[in-house]
Image 1 (tube, rainbow, N blue to C red):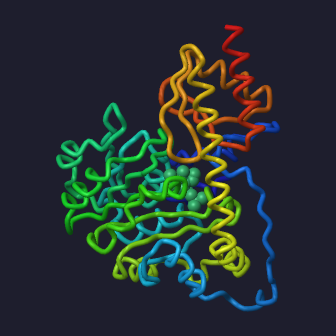
Image 2 (image 1 turned 60 degrees about the horizontal axis):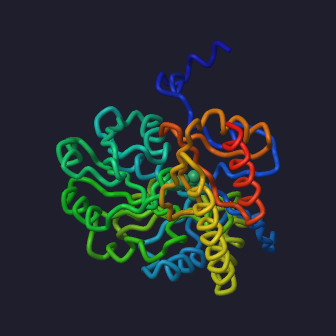
Image 3 (image 1 turned 180 degrees about the horizontal axis):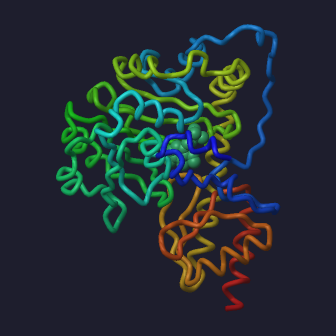
Length: 350
Ligand code: PMP
């Protein structure tokens, strides 16, 4: 296709994000995308589809604001947290001039979204215990408009030290926004930084219904920030970004009954995580890192061989760029038991 040469150079040369779905695989046990194993059912009223939705459906925004304990002016809803990342970069970063900063190993979309918009991405790796390296961040803040941090961090699973996040917010002051990605915070709500929103005008929090709310397929996320930031993001978001059926389902998920169900499922998944962690920790040569989301990062003696054996057996996990590490999403108890049993068997053979 010669017309492909018309595309922007950046896009032609871009290596896209390797989402779990893109990587394929076939099997019965899917623990590679940090989805929920619960197939919840919702009723969809489709009697308004001839009309555009409102840009930010009041009922949905209010429901999430109530859930998060903030004001509705501090909430924006978008097509997953991924769109929130994109909107922030589009609204705040001048292409070919400004930078974002992020701290690997972490979620891959901060860098890819930035690259897509010709915004450079500076990296300051997390420390050996996967915390923020504040001194090195301070040395690299020149030209940085957005600092992305993730807590619980994907893929390591740990929480970032709250004092460090506050120090980062002070350090960034009015030169940069600190974006705390809380995609997995519903599994450990006490660790949220949402209570800092009123104190720090440069704090932005990303949330999603994809994980604890078991709605990855819905594509519904939230950006929480001070109202001035929300106003700016509303300038760059698409005119009708939230499909009517999405609003209907999300409002049900955030209703008292929906929230109760999610709370119950979170307890269940956290118990399964503890089960998997305890079982894997007993295996020789295996290190399980403490995880606070619906996944565990696990180090094996030979992760490549094990990953391939699991894949061939129809247990689809996620390779991590961290040496010999595999990320395992927490499934239902049966999936966790089967995965643990197969890993135990494989390691015993070698
Ligand atoms: N942030 C993190 C840390 C994630 O792991 C993910 C999804 N894997 C997202 C954001 C994107 O979530 P959403 O499905 O809401 O776009």
